[in-house]
Amino acid sequence: MPRLAYLQSHVRDLTRTIGEGVPERAYHCWSLMDNFRWAEGFAQPFGLVHVNFADRQQRTIENSGYSFAKVAAANRVP
Picture 1: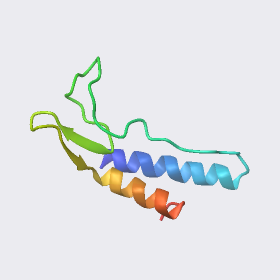
Picture 2: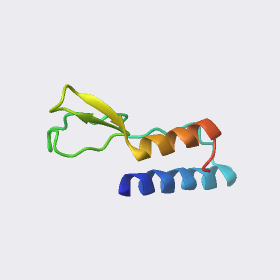
Picture 3: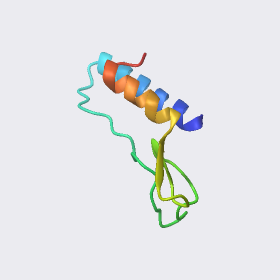
Picture 4: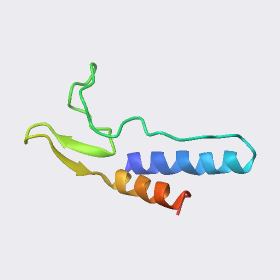
C-alpha cells in the first residue's frame, strides 16, 4: 500500500495548494503501466496497472489505480 499512500498524500497536498491559491492545472502519475526500466528491468512494478510480463502481458489494475480513478471522477480526494 505504499504507492496508494504516496498518491493520496500528493493529491491531498495538491488540494491544499489549490485552496491556497496556487494555479495548479493538472496532476499526472509517473506511469500508467509497469514497463521496462534501464536500472531495474521488469523487476520493480510501479504503475497504476500491473503488467504480468511472464503471462502474455496480462494487465491488472492496482488498488492505487482504482483509488486514483475515484479521485479523478470526483475531482477531489474522497
